[in-house]
Image (cartoon, rainbow, N blue to C red; front, side, top):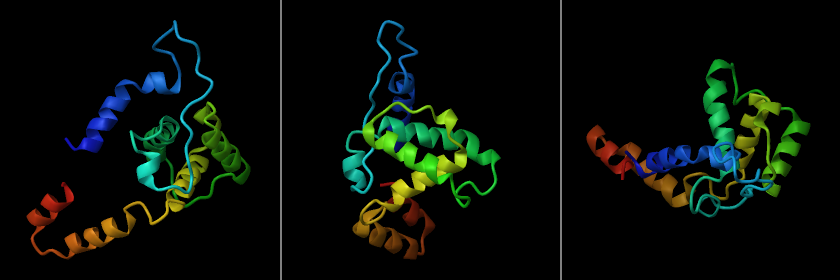
Amino acid sequence: MSSWAQRMHRRAATFGSVVTSCGHPGTPYPHRLEKVKFGVPLEEVCKNDIPGPLLVLILKLNKEAPCRKDVFRAPGNQGAMKKLIHFLQQGRLVNVDNYSVYTIASVLKKFLRKIPGGVFGRDGEAELFQIVDLDDQAQQQEKIHR
């Protein structure tokens, strides 16, 4: 299992405590979560792990997007997008059930688009293209999984 998958499994075990305190009735309901920073490098945003509110959006898309058509093509509601982005940047609790899958996908696309240098970064992108140019598929898989 890759390190990313291990972090996701570990995170899933504590996911209930990130979103709400459902699993811990004695603890107060949290009013603030981690802030999601738009327009900063991915290493800074995810230095410890994927921020909880961003993970909530990803999990909602993972659950509902496969049943919908053109989720990443259709635009989300602009007003709802601005409101959701504001809540994410302020670290406020968000009920994702109040937002459509299209709005959530649009917010996630905007987050990814604003990453300086792209998701992989300039060096990572160049390395990925070098790996794609390799002829041996086993060698490609080995280099990608490193």
